Image (cartoon, rainbow, N blue to C red; front, side, top):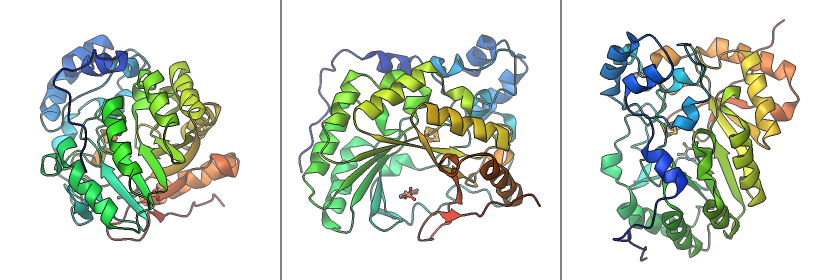
Length: 341
Ligand SMILES: *Cc1c(COP(=O)(O)O)cnc(C)c1O
Ligand code: SF4
């Protein structure tokens, strides 16, 4: 299979590409812009050496000034505690290396294959389960060839999930090259895109992206990733509306994070805002125990109680399923909500 190679002469960058390139990468810049205590800078700089700070200005503008506990800030500001080690928190808690069937391709669940289409993200989430993923071993674009060959070889794959990194950080041209190649594989019947870009950089959903989406031959599911109601503003609603107008079904996945969204009221508000934006809640993930993320963990009993309280407040279709990823299991494992008695 021949894929279009990167053009030697790049076309003019779109607005979103410029915004992505101009994202905040320096702890000092972030702390200063938000009017926070400068004493935060040193620890943030140390932790950023393990996993870089990266956050678009559009997302920073949704944070409260002067509030170190802002739920959006907490998701992106590196903290010294990330350098502590905790038993049970490892580099690859999900056993993803074992599920790799070709470079950049994970096959854990029946009928579905997840393609790490790129390692780039517009934002670096501190709790990210792929913060230590060996992308370099998997590589980005040039290795699609082997992943595509594996998808073609395995007739059981009905759904391809574009993930990463963030697949929408690829240009429209790269996305089109990828879906053209997938389009030649007859047994692929559904396409899914796992992306945080419509939330953190809604300008990504421009006319070019909408044209790509609406030209695809499969029903498309776009699973966005928001953790807090404050992430959803007018621009995000407009981006979601454009995705829907292009024919996509929109779902959301969140991670349950201590100090960000670990209470039923916050999660209920998130579900309601998502619904107003045309997005249904899908999963609420327990944190994957990746090194450097222990301070975000909510224990299982509390998580189940929060899920119980959430279920008691909302119509069923606004309640995400609380799940945990277990290495080697046949599906994401649901955790039953616990109801107050
Ligand atoms: C989460 C995940 C999927 C998708 O699972 P669904 O339950 O269908 O959302 C597929 N492949 C991998 C490797 C995953 O981690
Ligand atoms: S956008 Fe997704 S893959 Fe990228 S850092 Fe955040 S959680 Fe990780």
